[in-house]
Image (tube, rainbow, N blue to C red):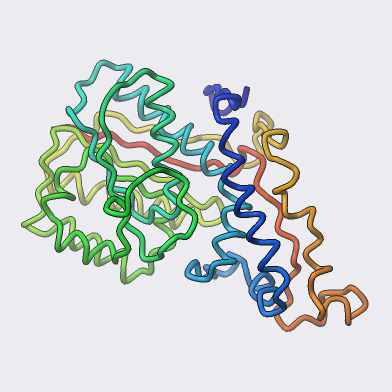
Amino acid sequence: MLKYDGLEIDLNKYAKIPNYLREINRNLLVELKKQATIQLVREFRYDNNHIPDYNIRINQQIYLLKYYLAYFLEYIAMYTVWSQIVCHANLTLSPTLKVISIGCGSTCDYLSLYFVLKDGAIKIPVDYWGIDLVQWDYISSDLSEKQIIRADISQWIKNNKSVFSAADIIVFPKSIGELTQKSFEELLQQVSSKECIMSSKRISILGSFAKLYHSRDIDRYNRFVETIRKKNNYKINKRKESNLSIDDPSHDTFTWFYPQEVDFSRLSLENHCNLFLQNDKHCRKCPAQEKLTHHPITKTKYFDYAVTVLEK
């Protein structure tokens, strides 16, 4: 049982999730046989506002092996909070739950929502629209291609205002900080345009943030929430944020839930690199100045999200 911020998450319910990572791990091992790939592994990082190019297949593999399980569980926690606010408080739900996921990636957020609804015996169809600039090779759900759209979010809203305006949930799954400043401002312009009028009586806005850039991400999230609220005359019904600091002693671990064979930090990636071997097994001479070991996230201290429910 995983415990976080007053929530309890039974990991046994998600025992099949690691199978998804096993396929990715097998593909990574094939890619590591190519020396050109090793250079890409060295450059995979997020410091100094650097964002890996997710259009490159191995970057998707590293990203998912490093973060997927942690994000899946974080979104379980996030949607559990949402369900407690909206469902357990006897607030009326729409006949169909319309979800817009901005920067949906591998659709991990959809799978988490699916399990929260299932575990809570909340029987409601979900109309999910995942929008992402990148075409992800490893979709972790059974969504059809029609529900996962490769597009710039602002352009998509401009061309699909009726779909966006009917949303019951808008979610940013670790994505709001990865928009360029220009793209984020364009997004605000689109949702504040006179043609974009939200039709749902109640709308939930969920955001999951990068712990390293919390201030930037939460500022963007707040600006987005306020833009939607003011433009459509909503009031805040409820707001809940994950409130444990990164040093809080109550943070839990889920190391045992992470299958050892896909813990790619155990692969000793340096030993796949000719440059590393030629330099007497040192990375200091590497032009990228980056090590090749990427440990998977296995602690709740990186959970960072907010849930806001707006109501007319």
